[in-house]
Length: 231
Image (tube, rainbow, N blue to C red; front, side):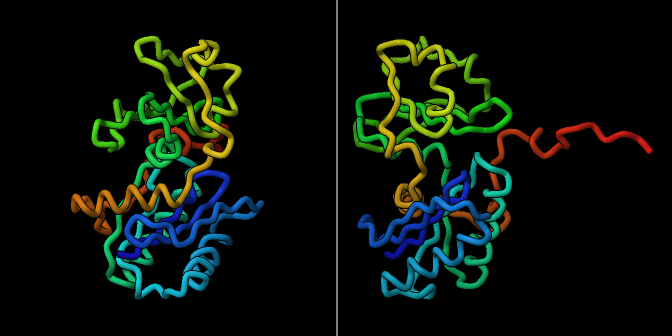
């Protein structure tokens, strides 16, 4: 099965092609461009270098959120277009779960933390079960990093651009029991998105067009930053 996976939820974009669980192509794109300028050319390049065309794709996988409002809309809009153009199935993946999959230590709790802007982070905790399947421990949330408390948890490995940005403000990272993931693990990988998408496909947990919507977590971002004065 061929899976085309992509992510546009943060400052980086990523595209991957997988055949079953083998990665044929993977790229993380660090360019100072809008994701709308980057994503489709990156998908074209992934297909060209892998010797496939869109009709060969069996499954599309895309991150639904949380993350950048604009980035998520670009990714989800592209996913909808591909679904309508090809009639192929699609899986929606959590950005925080994709981040957690970067961490290889399967005996630790993983704190996936994305920069949410406005001095906040998006956070969810994960752990691998005895079968090696990533399980979410509690609902994802948006919070101020200074208020983070994980005293009730065993050793936590924090991963993501939020953890990197606010490491000095997170009280629990002062504890020797907790740590940051390696620098190379801090960005969302479309390969991880693809792996999670294939897992969802195996459970028939797929999207239809009505359910293909971004997961924002924090609706206040859609409001104006400054109050609108009456005329």
